[in-house]
Length: 424
Image (cartoon, rainbow, N blue to C red; front, side, top):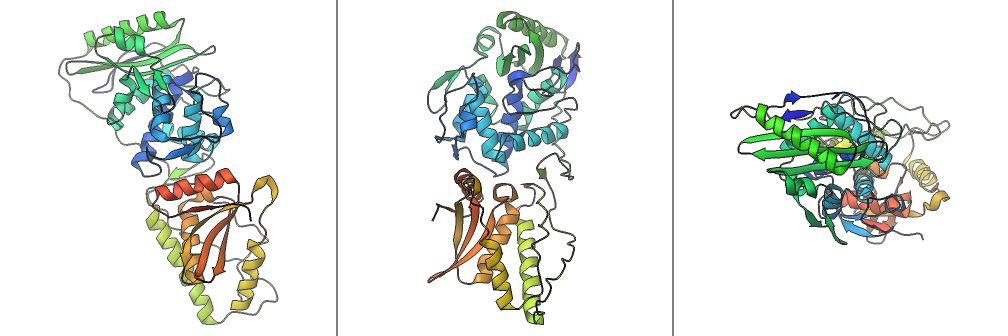
């Protein structure tokens, strides 16, 4: 496919809607979401990402990340964009969404919002996987999106080499960058199943053309074909044309089973009243009023904190756990019973502390607001308030070491103080 990037007009296409293996063209979406997450404050380029065993074990191309290593996100972005490193791409996905599977769901949501109607992602790197498919049209539009939506990062794709933190890496597209006048990116891709793929962009004067080829036989033949297509584009494109930047992506407000949803309004509209616990005396009116006010305050604060943020649908409350009408003494007993059921399987002996507060009520409110604001990172953890001489500690417990570390990183990105708690 050949496109005038300024207007989005298609100048030439052949089999542009055939679903094929995109290979590392996939990383354009991975990087698009990384730039989006930085812009939205979910993470920063300075965030030190903890490398998992899964990320480190990805097959080449890679930069050689090690399990347990910490490396700034900016270096992972460079490695994925320039070196096309699979280990870096997986690490980016895990840092943003907690797991590659969750990140793939976000990739698909984003693809839908960008109008990539015939693309399905299964992973962050593009290695061959059943159902992981795209088209020349969708990937051409993806390249245009990177240029117009995040121009401040686009120069990364034109670097013939770059510092990736642990070593210097060369651009997989450097031959095209060196040989074609005006070429300044953007992404190569190769697997046996896909062949040699390339989305390339070039600028001459005030004209910018994007060309995409799937299934090339070799790097030289692919580059030659892309050069022909770019030449065709420059010959057909008008010299003067109005620039029509793509519209901002529109994300669905229905989370369904597709993963995290970016919402414009997140306040809870309706909550079913739970069954009362049998044989427990009714609480006094002041106690019930305080409980209602606490919950409403926490929900309202969370709605303010996470407006326009990425959230997942929380799990349903287990049937055996209910909020009952209770005296203060009974309430404390129930709270103690719940929080002491910390899982000891899967090495879930870790937790995090988000501060010490003057009252139990304040600590519980902070825990609830934080849980609502960061549902993905804190999913499955248990809230517990611990009384100390100086005040009340607000803790999340029942986490693995990695999930606790990741949760702290995400909370710190929100300017929420956090400390990892090791096994007692």
